Length: 149
Length: 369
Image (cartoon, rainbow over all chains, first blue to last red):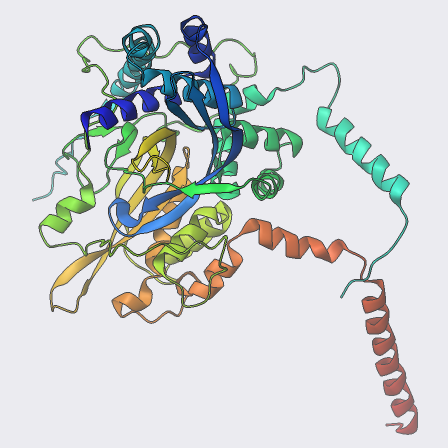
């Protein structure tokens, strides 16, 4: 996988997992000057989520998950994809718009600084808090000697 | 057999109005919101998502509200909604080894790599009604994190948590799970035929009614298809979901999914190579659904009877019996259809019974004992 694709996968992952309100707020000013053409309007559907027997064995179908997807083209000519779990069309649209702009040298650094990095930090903080709560329930069981010969 | 009837439109409309009124309850109590159901009745939402087969907390919470808390009805609503959406694609198989762990326990090893965390569990509660909840006050503040706890900043991809059954596999003491790369069966497209493969079976069990699977799992413990289970490992946490969109050609993360996984270590058998090894069962569900995942693992193992040279004599071991009756939407549908007008059918039964009785009476008159 090329470094470009690895970077793109990273920002797409951050955009998909961001809370919708925060994503829209953070990105609103950053994309105000950009123009987009809608290639595929946001649409809601399902993804069949697969899992593996025994966690590592043969694949099976676990169940569906809602997904909203959207494709746009920026005025730079880059194509952006938004594929986001859930049913938020504004979220998928914004993810697609940002994906298109992040592929341009004009917006890349700016958007990373203003949108991607803050979202990532917020996510890490939330994870950290969760982990800390969970960590308080870590347990060391010990067995008792039963006094038998 | 039932027949179509006409009429009753007004009564039906009025019944729906009355249902809405009863669902709302006394107007002086505040109306419950979908977000409250999602957040505060989270385990009900998890069950509806698992058996309704759609991971979408808001939809499941809405279904629970609409069904006035009848979870089987809510599952039906979610399944019905599911059919209105196009299916875009299938995901890459989720990786439960790389899970953001919220709970992880083992009943087979006291000390295991990665340790045990209890997480939010009803275990060790005394099952005494907590009247402080009746006061509608704020919940007690969670225990402050102890000073010694110091976790590294969370990485987006959590480190792997070693799997208990893999430890046994590595020692050659546990049968392995192998991926031959086969495309899994999808029972929502192709109804299962029997005997069916493991992928169809696991998919059916995930969607299966928790009560039914729990009873079957319990029956194996009581001797109807005994398979000597240990809870090898139970884990709950979030995993990332990835798809590979055709137009991109590389995997992307679309979001996360909370799952509950249970792996049982079951009684050992002698295998084809002459070695004796433990056998295993697998349970997995959406959200936090530990009882369901455990029941599923017990039944998954019971259904492997023939693979391990056991005679399938008990209900839990009979694939067609288990899989064709575990779906509560199908089961509720067929039981509920008894409420449809069977007037003609019943009239013919009634007629028949009367004729038999009349024949018996006249025979009695002819032959006085």
